[in-house]
Length: 136
Image 1 (cartoon, helix red, strand yellow):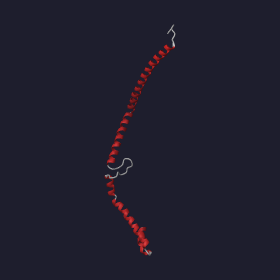
Image 2 (image 1 turned 30 degrees about the vertical axis):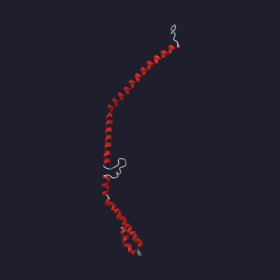
Image 3 (image 1 turned 60 degrees about the vertical axis):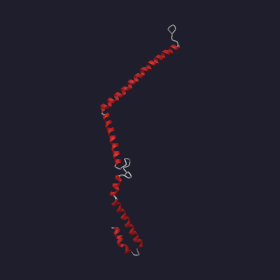
Image 4 (image 1 turned 45 degrees about the vertical axis):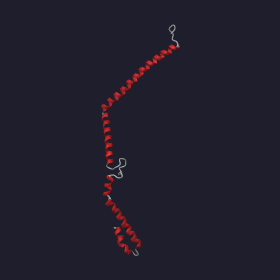
């Protein structure tokens, strides 16, 4: 500075001091702001019961995971409710359905028998009773 006048280098130095000082103040205030956001958000969530809801949701998700695991352990897929191959559940269901499945096979055999009789009969009287039985 000569005669109270600032030269370019002095101006640059002073601007740098101002910038550095305000940068520190701004950074400090941002940090305070971010802490305030976190603190106030927690207070509001607690006050409105959102924190409790979040905890309940977390517990429910864990319970869902536990139940899905138990379901798979028992032999049912958690994705599509299908039996898992080789599971005890599949075996028990299959065993319970043997009689019903046999009924399907018996009906199919009876149908084949009647169709064969229709093709091998020479007269309607030979198959009339079979046809009457089908139509009942």
